[in-house]
Structures are given as structure tokens and as C-alpha cells.
Image (tube, rainbow, N blue to C red):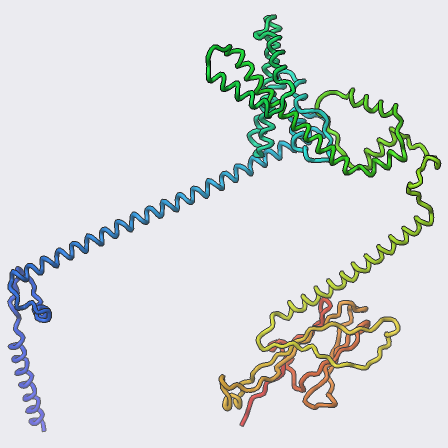
Length: 555
């Protein structure tokens, strides 16, 4: 046996040695030359270029190299174009961002200017209220309350400038420049520009007077000034503007003219335009205020004049007092018809009793019976309004409670359905004589679904599902007006006499609510919190949520 094994092993080793020699002979290592280029002969055979000459092969290789260089140049060109596009896009994005920032900055500047303007106006109002107003406060209050009919302003803003000394005029000019920078309204901006022109002119006039007092001689003859003033007297702002343009054209044209005279005329025309424009604006403001005041007080004034006639001497006295009032802007605030009207009537009439023979036939006379009837009507209106408000409050409260109950229940699921069918109970209550019984409001849901027990899994599938069954109920009963809020509602189950598959669920709470009953399936309940059982009474809502037990199918 051993000799036979050795013989077999020997024959196998000889066979292996012979195969290795044949393999070595057939796979000889070729002589490698590093200087020779690699030639892919199999590919040449497939392309049919193995039969071409070496020169033709070199031409083909050079052509391929040129094509590769052209393709590389195209790729580089596309990359440069893409980089330029990206740079242009980044520059465009940066430019748009800068434009947006510029717009936001301008809006911020406008808002900041408006804020400072409002603060300046409030400071002016405070100083006016405390009787320590500056000239700029009176002018600002005049222009910003021009459309307020409750504020009566007498005097023109020019009169404020004419009564100031040189130091006050310089301060006023600086304050006017502040308002010019802050105010963005075009109409008010024109007003401030005109006021600046008048202020500068007044400063020039005061300086000229001071020079005359020092030198006892004026640079311009007074007669010339009088003639220039006569030229502009009685002209409107549009006419003065045309004259000013003509004077400027004449000065630009040149020629044998008195330049100093016409320059003085041009300066006076420019000042006169601002002065007349301010006067026209003041007339328009006064006209609007008078119209609003007359339309508002026409009926009251007529009744007062007819019942309490003012003598002519008193009217003359009042007119004289207005004429003797000091020049400048005077602000009269109308706090309401009660205070000022009563003071005026007391000063004019001293509350003199009315004689019956002075009352006209169409005058309104109140008797005691008429007063009592009007009082009764007013009381009836108040009662009706109070009832409506009470009903509205009750409706809102019911709505809030229902919304809170819906929020506690959560959103309805796909298998949830409304269950608002109650059973009529013929019950009598011992407290019915004291309180009127009423049915509570409720919002219920029934949960249905498929029960995939072993039997249904065997006989049904998703395409052919089993019939839906009731899996649970959610009852929400609203008791917001319980007489005894500490009394918790209770529930009880009893058999249904008509159908053994159902039971009657009765919920009782106490006065003034009736008992309410529902028909539910006769199945065993799950009382565990794991299956969402809930029986609680909170904030006027009684909640009873339960699910039925699920039984395992056994063969």
C-alpha cells in the first residue's frame, strides 16, 4: 500500500514539473527597450491602420495632436469666459446691494429728519404752553397748525420778524435754516425759504439803521426807496415774479443802464415776492379757518344771538379790544365749546334771566311732562342696548367654550365622525319651579375603524377590507352656567329595552340643566389611561372619552 502511494505521488510530481517547464517555454519575457515607443497593435488592427506606412501614421498622429491642442484651447477659452461671467455677476450683485443700501440709507435719513422735525415741533409746543416761546416757536406753530380749525391764530408771521433786534434776528435765521433742512414738504419748504428771505432783509435793514446812526448818512436815498416800494405795491406774487425775471434779463443784457439802481430794484423785487407770497398764504389760511369755524358754530351762534342779544356798545367794545391787541402772532386754543363759550357768555350777558315776552314763537320750550317723556325714551333705549350687549356676551361666551372644547379634542382624524344624536328623556326635576330646565350644548365624536384580528387577516386584505366597526366615543358636554359649580356631572349606563346590542348612556349635572342621554354600543370599556380613557369636569366642560376592548380571535 505504501509503495503504491509513493508511486502515485511520484507520478504526480513529475507531471507538475513537466507542465511548469512547458509554461515557462511558452511565456518568455520579451526584451524591453525603454527608447522604443509603445505601439497598440490590436487597436491598429481594429482601426485598419496597421497596413499604413510610417509617414502616414505620423501624419495621423500629428493631426490628432493638433485636434487635442485646439480642444484644449477651447476648454481654456470657455473657462476664461466663465470666470468673466462670474466676475460680472458678482459685480452686478454688489452693485444691486449698494443700490439697496443707498435706498435704505435715504429712507433712514428721511425718517431721521422727520423724527428731529417732530421733536422740534414738540419742543415749540411745550415752550408755547409754558409762556416762554421763542419767535421760531410761534412761526413753526403757525405753519404746522394751519389746517387745524381748533386753533385760532391771529397775526402774520412777518410781524414776528419786524419786531426783533439784531441778535434775535440772527438766532431766528439759524433756526429757520434748521427747519429748512429737516422739512421735506415742498409747500412748507417754500414757506421757510420765504421766511429766510424776509429775515435776511430785516437783518440788512437793521444793519443799515445802525450804520446810519454811526455815520449819519445813508448809502441809498430815501426817495429812491420810496419809488421802488411804490413800483411793487399792489402787485401779486405772479406779477412780481414776471417783473423780477424782466429785471434779471435786463441786467444780463447790459447796456447804458444804472447797474446799482437796477440791482437794488432786483433785490427789493425778490424780497417783495417772498413777502407777498407769505401774505397770500396767510389770507388763504385765515379764510379756511373762518369757513370751518362758521360751518361748525353756525347753529349755536344763531341760537345764542337770538336768545341773548348783545348790545351795540358791547360789540363796539369787543371790536375795539381786538384792534388794541398787540401785533404779532397770537394763539387761541379752542379747548371745547364749554369752557370758552361759558366764559364769553358770562362776560357778555352775566347770565341775565330771560323774559318770557322776549322768546320768539318758534323757540324750543321744555315742559316737565316733555322732559319726563324724553327721559323714559332714553331709559328704554339704554335697556334695549344693555339686553343686546348681554345677549352678545352670552353668545361670545358660548362660542369661546365650544372653541376651547374643540381645542381639547384636537383635530378630527380620518375615521372620526360627528355623533350629535341624543335621546329624548321625559323626566321631571324637583328644582324645575326655581330654575327653568334647559338642555346643555354638546359636541361628540365616534371613532370607527378596521379590526385586523386573526379572522379578518385570514379572510380580508387591504384591497378588500372588513366592515368598519365602532371603536370608541368622545363626549363633550358644556355646563357653563351650573348653579353649583362644585357639583361634578355623573354618568350611568342602563340596558336599552328595544335592542340588546345597545346601551343608554345618561349624563346628569344638576340645575339648571336637564339630563342628556345617548345610545352607545353594548360592549366592555377600556378604563386604562393607555387607551385614552378620560372622565373629567374642568372649566365648564365635562369630557367622557372611552374605547372598547378588543378581543383576540381564537380557533
